[in-house]
Every structure is written in C-alpha cells, then in structure tokens.
Length: 152
Image (cartoon, rainbow, N blue to C red):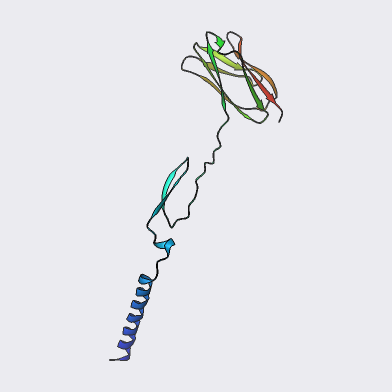
C-alpha cells in the first residue's frame, strides 16, 4: 500500500469519525426539540418551533378616543342636549344620527356635515380651540350638543 493510499484512508476515516460524532452527540434540547409553542396576542396568532425565541406582537396603533353619539329624533336630541368634555390636544369623535335630513354645525370649529337616515355625521377633530361650542342642527337652529374644551 502506498503512502498516498494510506493518507486517503486516514482522511476518509477522520471524516467518518467527525460525521459520526456530530450525528451521535448528546441532544441539545434547544436545537432538537420538535414540539411547538403557540403565542397568541390580540393582533396575531403564530406557531413557532420551541427552539425559537418567543416574541409578543403588540399593536403600534393606540386605541382611538371614545366616540360621543348624539341621536336626533323628531328634530330633537334624544335624552336632551349632549354635553361633551375634552382637554386641549385631545382627539374628539362625535357621531350624530338623525331620522330626517339636516345639517349638523359644530360652532367654533366651523364644521358642517350632512346627516340623515342611514347617513350619520361623523366629526373627528383635534381639540385645538378652548371654550364651549354649540353643536346644532343648522337648518332648524336646534342645539343638540355642547363641546367644552378645557386647557390641559
């Protein structure tokens, strides 16, 4: 047997020993576990191998402000004039529904929106003006709400 053949046999034996060691080494729980873990959040459910690092998905959107609803029936606000309070810098959402076509006017902010059956008027505004502002049905001049914006 020549020296070249002996080196080839030794090299093959060495490679076989390394492969056997890697294949037969004691199991490391992090890399060989076949179970799965399910992580659930309000936004998403994901299934990942147990070897993965658990992560929590959080929504980057914050819940919006509460919506104040004013319902108008027979030309009058149900339950009386709705009083809405906010602080300067707040987001304000007002939803007006009505059983007849009309225009809703938010004084001070000088915003008018149509309202009627199946067509609510929705106001999404930033409270950047301080004071007390009437919300009225523009055509009939009936006050249906009052928006009070106070300093922070």
